Amino acid sequence: MRVLGIFRAVRALGALRGARLVRVASSANRGMRALGSVMGRRGIGYVATLSLVVTLTGAAGMYAFERGVPGSTIDSFASALWWTAMILTTMGSDYFPRTAEGRLLCLLLATYGFAIFGYVAATIASFFVARDADTDQGEIAGAKQIVALERAVAGLRSRIDVLISTLGESGVRRQE
Image 1 (cartoon, one colour):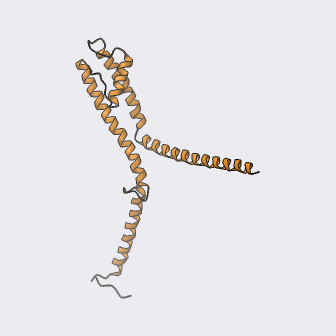
Image 2 (spheres, one colour):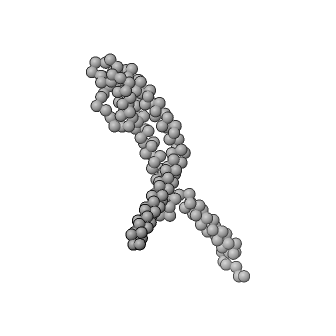
Image 3 (cartoon, rainbow, N blue to C red):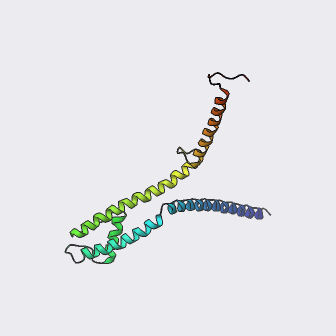
């Protein structure tokens, strides 16, 4: 009978682990939904689509400019696509364009990559700032804290109005 008790205990531990897994998964799911909401408000879908178009167009341009140039390592669209992706992700590449057009395109793509990197970083930072503002321990005033402050100010105004109405024109408190 003790053996059966051990099996029950092992099953109970497995159920506890399963409950923890469900709690972690639901917490991660809530976090991803909140992050998706922030990203949606910030237009990340538009930015991702624009970045895909810029990547494909940049690769096509680099392939057109650098193909057949002596010393160029871009000899296929795939290598041009790889190079463009590395430039846009600010990783860089061992290849440097040989033509003036390729260098100008490289400058434009690198500038776009830096701008998009900053945009994505700011979007993710706004997600964390908003989460911090929603907590009572957050150092940043969020919407809840501002509403509480507005209520406190309205309460102080009403008290001031009562005090003013009880004071006479001479500034001396009236006898009731």
